[in-house]
Image (tube, rainbow, N blue to C red; front, side, top):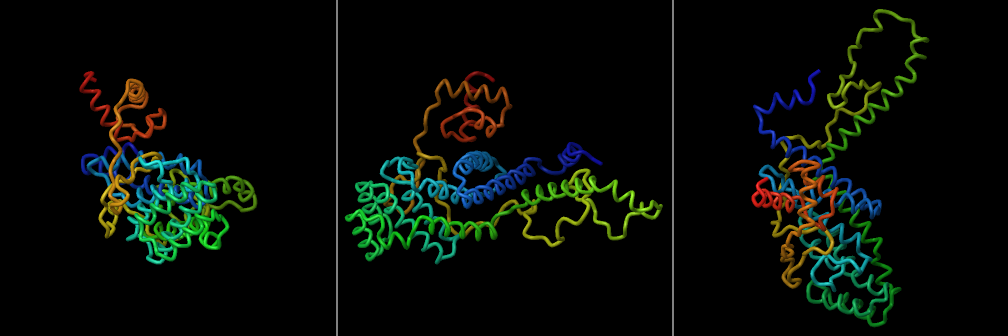
Length: 369
């Protein structure tokens, strides 16, 4: 049987290897996106944040390459989920303006996802976001913040007059148990977002890598069961030369399961939307992306909240000597190009893999590496 290195060597002359690596990275991004959706539905805050950091680094690296696929919609969804996850934490900010709470910051991002969500569901989630942006402040006893939030909503969203009047009454009375808040709860917001994630994943996201790994694990369990019962079966069944012949309909060994022959059929032969390599470039959405959202906290999302989601990037932060030292140590330990591993090993305060790559190029020119 040919080893993986032999397969790679034999195809390098025929196919651009970087394109193949781009497909693999796309599968990895899909895997992490599916994991983030699952962690959001499970409300696993700590694991969600840890996986989110890896997801952003990989997407940055892939989009900066010449063979990168477009994962902008998945990235935007993750930006949205991060803010909703922090919805009740008024100490967290994703924008330059400290008065912008996480749920307020999530609203313009949700607007950009209008073309990839069902219209009624999109409108319902928007209403829940508006109500909960005010409700969180009232529940926390921050009446001043609640007033500013309502004023912002009146200017920056298409707030219906009836809803505006009810929210104004809630804020003035500081009534956290008003019937409107009971009908539009945070839990309802999360459940409706769960519905959106399930629908989006079924139509636009691949779980090929997860299914392949699942197949390997199930095969291992099948092999374990066969090993434990092999001796007993051999004692009960008389030996014969015919028993050693393969049956006519015996299932072939899957190449993904190296040296493992499952005892029984593991999967149906029916193909269910497996993302093949030739489909690495996914179907483009109908809306035009005007910007790249930053997932990390305290990053720039809205430069002008009155301009219908016109985004700007955060001013470039200068590199200091300590960061250069960490970058050199990371390259020495893991090698050039391993930006994701370096980010996981050292703290660069929300810098991305692209930032590390650009700085390393500068250092090589300056110091003659």
